[in-house]
Amino acid sequence: MSDTELSDTRRRILDAAETLFTEHGFEATTLRQITGRAQVNLAAVNYHFGSKEALIQELFRRRLTWLNERRLEALDRLETEAHGAPLKPSKIVDAFFGVAVNMAADREGGGRTFMRLLGRTYTEPSEFVRGFLASEYSEAVGRFKAALFKALPDVPQEEILWRFHFMIGAMAYAISGADALSIVGETPVDDSAIDALYPRLMSFLLGGLRAPLPALAAAPKPGRKPRTRRAA
Amino acid sequence: MSDTELSDTRRRILDAAETLFTEHGFEATTLRQITGRAQVNLAAVNYHFGSKEALIQELFRRRLTWLNERRLEALDRLETEAHGAPLKPSKIVDAFFGVAVNMAADREGGGRTFMRLLGRTYTEPSEFVRGFLASEYSEAVGRFKAALFKALPDVPQEEILWRFHFMIGAMAYAISGADALSIVGETPVDDSAIDALYPRLMSFLLGGLRAPLPALAAAPKPGRKPRTRRAA
DNA sequence: CTAGAATTCAAACAATCGTTTGAAACGGAC
DNA sequence: GTCCGTTTCAAACGATTGTTTGAATTCTAG
Image 1 (cartoon, rainbow over the protein chains, first blue to last red):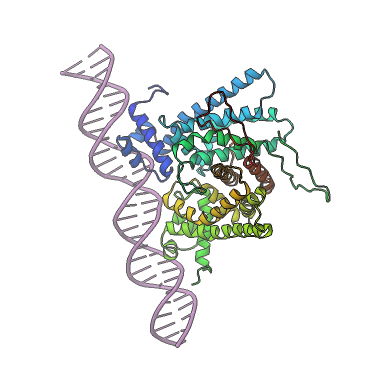
Image 2 (cartoon, rainbow over the protein chains, first blue to last red; image 1 turned 90 degrees about the horizontal axis):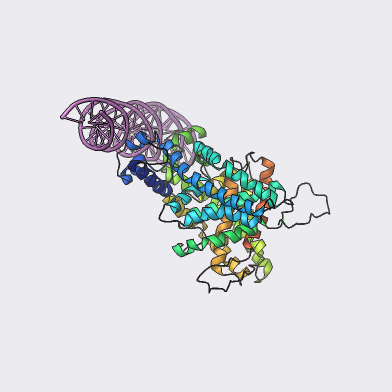
């Protein structure tokens, strides 16, 4: 069997698992629930994937590979157009997060379900999940970090990393909690609001990225208040 | 027994559970691990709390009540000083998130452990967890929402709620993933970086809150590009 | 000191978990 | 039709889960 071509059973299991993991989490979802929803035999998971952990890995692999390839394509396009000149930070942010939010808006293909799962998995403590998540991300994140460093040469690189970190968190939470009962709003967020998420999130992220640099209180000389500088 | 005064056994169980839940999650942590670490008998959890779920609820209750009381105290202080005038948005944000980040910086009292757990719990899909989390937050969030509406009368209230949402996400992810292996950075974040988290996060959040409003593409007339306005 | 309540303890409970097994059913090649 | 590799199936596996039990122990008044 080819690696990319999936049998009916494999695909049905993956789709069912995606939905159930999103709704109840990895640990709380049992193989019997998955095989029940997929309408396949219980032993099919271990036959086709080997174990529950391997199923989870395969699930992330098929989506994350595609997602990060699209991100890198977008970045490649920007860089060839720029002919070596630094990119606009807003373009970089758009290439990284725009692709993700776009995937999250896709209801039919299951992209929405997956992105909610992914958003929650960022904070997953499980060892093996964090492991391959980091490896799947390493190339794309490395390329985007480099692009941001080049685009913002005056901002300390450590600061850029922190803000990248914050941006991922804002996006992850916005996507994962968007149609769940959120803490801030009592009214459930409907579908049109999901479509409006993209411009809202993007302007928030850019505002945060370009915020004045914090006046870090690292042993400041008395009486000399460090001035805040603008980041971008 | 008083409600606030805890027996040795109760407190030992709560402390052990907090640590283990943070490290492995709710489902993956067993009562035998908890009672083993706390050095109490296995049956002690069900004797003192009734069930594993009730233990989780009690764990959040003792910390969240304290956290939100401090937040409301800080807001009260600001409002009495202002004599009815609108507050500065930065002060409001500082009252809400500053208290949380401060608690996250507290290593000895277990505040750090709890805030990492809390940050992860925001995206927890479990029904009963989300339920009492929302109820514990409702009062404080309502007060802060009102304060932000008053402070930013020109910004659509829906937009403020979204940005509040984004801010919570950025904070939750920053705290919960700060000393775990993060996606963006290959080097583990050490303690001094945690102390510097506060000013970094705060300027990012304020930058996002005050970002130009997004040009929402809600049936725009052709040829008329909506102008971006400044939020604050 | 003693009676009675509160707490601790070892042991067992039923239920459910992921995984394995061996036979049955299916599929195309010859 | 026959063969053989692939896939499906019902059933069971051992292990582990949260919870309960009833006796032992500790604590607290009177």
